[in-house]
Amino acid sequence: MKTLISEFAIKEKVEELAQQLSIDYKQKNPVLIGVLKGSFIFLSDLARAMDFPLQLDFMSVSSYGDDTKSSGIVRIIKDLDDTITDRHVVIVEDILDTGLTLGYLVEMLGARKPASIRICTLLSKNHNRKTVHISADYVGFEIEDKFVVGYGLDYRGYFRNLPNIAELEEEDLALGFLAD
Ligand code: IMP
Image 1 (tube, rainbow, N blue to C red):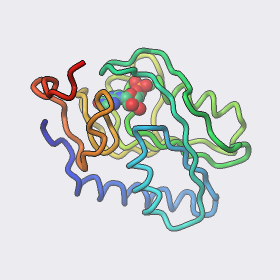
Image 2 (tube, rainbow, N blue to C red; image 1 turned 90 degrees about the vertical axis):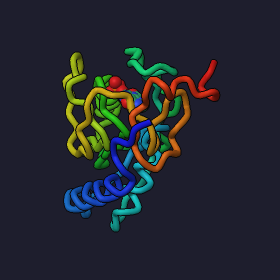
Image 3 (cartoon, rainbow, N blue to C red; image 1 turned 60 degrees about the horizontal axis):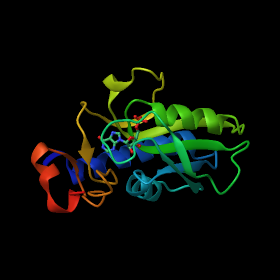
Image 4 (tube, rainbow, N blue to C red; image 1 turned 180 degrees about the vertical axis):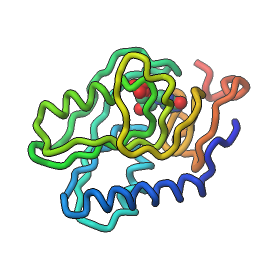
């Protein structure tokens, strides 16, 4: 596995994003929506870097199954606990790839009439946005079309606990615990 983004670089970027969000949302009592499971570490660091009133809620959707390619199917596994009508919403994602997941989420949450809705993603693979025209308002890092793991991102449920972001290589797929 090859480190793509170090723990330190992530920390600096998260603080930078938190500062931007603080400027934009300090007076707005926003609700940050974490898209599970991938965003849980990013969101917890991001939220702790913000020093103003905000609320957190979570959704769980699946567009991937266990593979490394988008399935094209977005399934809601867990919906929000609370209503977002008239609230300023920031969707927090780990990675924007084809845009399928976020495209679906923005449409679905937009129908609940929030006061505003924006996207904050740690990573973005821009060249993969073929079918869905969606862009994030806050982006940590633009990355190439490589499958990455760590800092919340997984392969078959593993590697979420890595403190850095690493590129999954061919040889990693031979690791014993990944065998079917
Ligand atoms: P999209 O719907 O194609 O934009 O995919 C978004 C979701 O796919 C993310 O929330 C991740 O769960 C997953 N995903 C996309 N690329 C990667 C990757 O490189 N590593 C791990 N998960 C990924």
